[in-house]
Length: 386
Image (cartoon, rainbow, N blue to C red; front, top):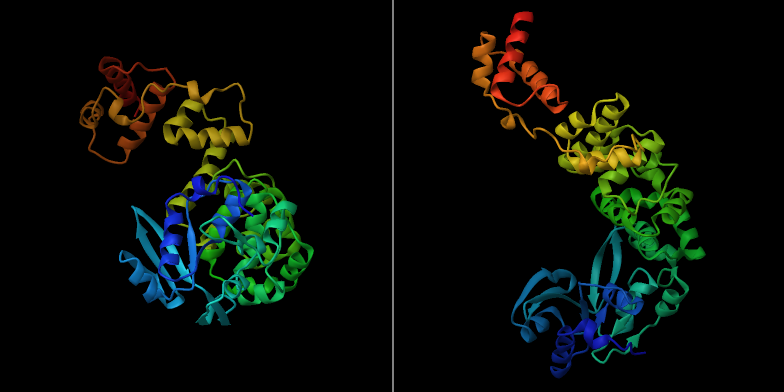
């Protein structure tokens, strides 16, 4: 099978396969780029598989990086781009249901494709665009099915992360998970405990962003896979999250499932991400307290405020985009800290912050003009009442 736009999609990478062939080796495009090409989707990463051993790959392509040479992977640099090239291999004796203890290089393409996770990821293309599909992957693409290569129980026992990847691909592509594959996930859910939380979270980042995330999340919850994953173990209610960022999605899930934001620490997110999710909660509280929009926008990022406002449907009459603030920081106020201290005539201390906050509030709400004379008059009145 040859798709009409093969040369346009793979461009100069086709020359890499031809170079391998001229040097007496087989080489094929493999994995996600083949899947996305057949679906008519855009792709950027192009992976190559070959019967050339790593050292032979390096002899053919002098510019290379040993990115995973113990597992047969070399990254070659070709015409300004990088391509991951992996020798045909089989994998055995998986450690902790995640990593193969034994990798054996083989000379047969089919053996290499047999070790892969799902049929839609187990196809290859030669330099003419001919498809090598030993597991009916193209048929599953047409049927919109996620199905493991060969025995699903074996695939998940080897690598437990594949269970979550099934839901991730289901979400990304909008595909259903084939019954035997889904039943095998339900049977093996506890194996997810052997996978690091960092890898699990990385899959969730992609799953939540997919166009089919709602259906995939419903299937995931039904499978009970989430029962063994921190934070997500408390997720019972879901909604379409495809239009939200990862942090926004976590906030929404915490809101609709009443999950403590302290549970985010268990996901080993960055401090920046945890702070952002908690900040959404603080913004939400500001709206509940009927804080004027000017004060909220002064304190928080405009896009973050807009997200919370729109998600919770606060004050639909307020057009956040058109709200212009009189000041954006204390530096915009026509007075210095030293002038405040001189006018109030007190030794520096915590009182300065409360005075500054009062000044900012009055100016933002339009009750005080941002000019030195009016500000000094305002401070004088404050001083007399202290």
